[in-house]
Every structure is written in structure tokens, then in C-alpha cells.
Amino acid sequence: MRTIIVAFVVLLTIFSCDRDGPPPSDEGKIIGYWGGSSESTRNVDGSFNGTTRPCRTYHMEFREDNTLNFQVSEQVAPQQCTLKKDWRHEGRWERMANEKYRLFLTSADGRQDSIIKPERIWFPQENVMLIQFEPIIDNGVDKPFYYEQLFFKQN
Image: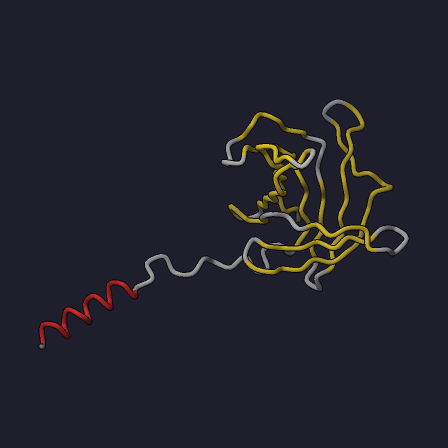
């Protein structure tokens, strides 16, 4: 009987240990001003598919009070980008879980403009943020790629 109890305790210990632990929280990492560097397209498996648009970038400021400022860059000359002055939106953001956020943008006349729900927002290293947008749908057929936007935290 004692052997059965010891075996049970040993098995319980082995199978109840969480070797990896819970995933680290990304809470608070999004706060700050993020400058986009480029937009890339990736195959659904995550591999790079060869398309990069250096001037197709966004600049976002996520504030602690859950408000945000959202701007878009435009190409003004070869290898030269600038923020579009007529495309500046305020809004708010909401963290739903690790890597899951929603962005609510408001147009210049105060109406809610759009709700953006990226597939994933994550922070692979300090001061780096990646946003993965949903796979592209064309005429009701999923294309085998998605957009990914790379951001660097600005001070």
C-alpha cells in the first residue's frame, strides 16, 4: 500500500508541474510612441514572401489612459517618407488579452471611423512591436498571405 501511495505522489508531482509556466504578460508594453518602419507581406506559415513597402507605415502613440493617436506616412520622393498632414486620427485602444488588442479610430469630424482588430500585436524584443493583420480576402477567397507591420519605439 505504501508503494502505491509513493508512486501516486511521484506521478502527481511529475504531471502537475508546469514546466513552462504562464506566458509572460505584455501588459503595459504597448504604451509609448511607435514609429513604423515598413509593411511586409508574409505567407500564412510566417515566411517572408518578398514584398516590402517602406513608405506604407503607420505611427501610433498609445497613451496610459487608453487613448491613441494614429498617423500614416506617404512617399514624397524616392526613399523619402513623411507623415500625411490630412490623415491624423485620435481614438482609443483596448487590451483584451496577451497579443490581442482593438483600436477604435475617430475621424476628424468626431464620428467613429473604424475598429481595427489585428490578428496579433506582439513584442519580440524590447522597443520592437509587430502587428499582424488578418489574411487577405479577395472575392471571398483567402489569399495565402497577410500583412505585418514593424514598429520601433521612439523616445
